[in-house]
Length: 291
Image 1 (cartoon, one colour):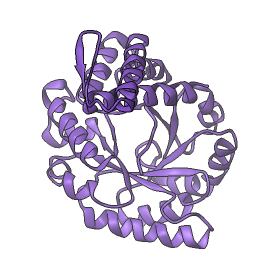
Image 2: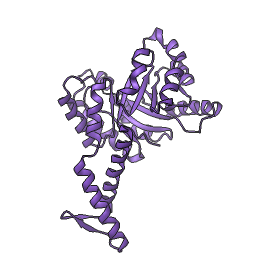
Image 3: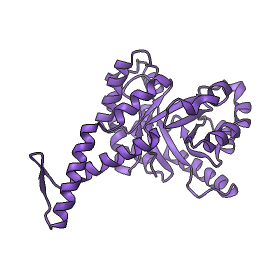
Image 4: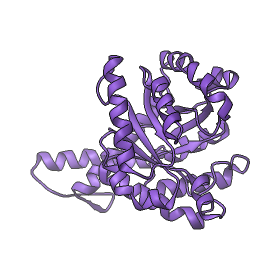
């Protein structure tokens, strides 16, 4: 299981005004946030009202994720409210322990069974927010219900007492992308601050760097970031045209029993052909999400 989205917009789970129009902002998926965006005193009420936006957004065809809290008592209460039809995945903050993720998975399985959901329907997004979580990436990625690894850049920087800059976060991005690719998971995050939405040129450069190292999507906190993420992660027209030529030539070569072919003066073998097919698939998915 992997999440096919590029842009994920956080929306406070208790903010009815923002929730009302969240589906119109252009995100591929929405994350209803029960953690940082909701004050402790407001969490019980946010949970009680969670079914309303989930049902409405699901009815509108909007993919919905829910970020739960990290403390066990809050997390269990969050799961009871969030495991329901219309939720694609739960975002788990401060993921550092594969064993804890397996416990959460077992709890989710019980609610899935009670509520008539397909077993394993709701994935987990492991939010890596500390060096310890980064050190344990392989075990975290191996948990069966995990559908994505994500970098929590602000909290990661906080654990080291520094700013969330490229100097710190470029390496975690690469490690997350590699660990995710090894398991066929989505890799979500940027080598910088999520709070950057005024200088969209700088933000675009940050998103481009994330894509260049293998990240497949980005967490967003402001609607202005969404078009940038979609534009950068979508294959360019030139990429799509190249991929079309490669796949056509490769299919012809295969039909003739050849294991390689030349396209645009360069040799194409199976890895190049598979990369071209992936570009066409990503282009089709982007077009579908945009529609």
